[in-house]
Length: 127
Image (spheres, rainbow, N blue to C red):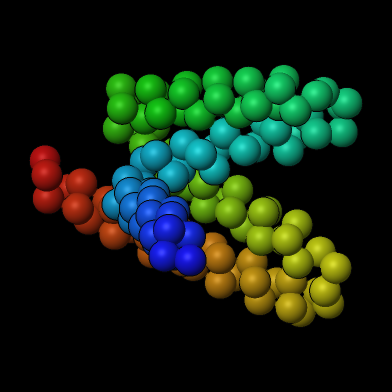
């Protein structure tokens, strides 16, 4: 029983560290959200999971590299990720009423916008 709790604690700590790292690195999180866009666009094409994973990985890698090369790309990635999060929130609550769906979309977009603005405030201080 003690070994099980220890392993559970290690897994929980690992997950929390990943979440904290993603919260601190908004550019990485924006790249992950941008990487999900092509996967959602081709999900009805009949590709297998391996192909979708390759598409996701290439899109994330390209978005991350371009963000670190150009400041304008970071700005565009912030805007695109806010829009993508709005669409993902709409898909997530698609079974509910229109009012509840729009509420979730607005809340998700506001959280993403505040998160990106906080990142840009910190980025501006670094320059």
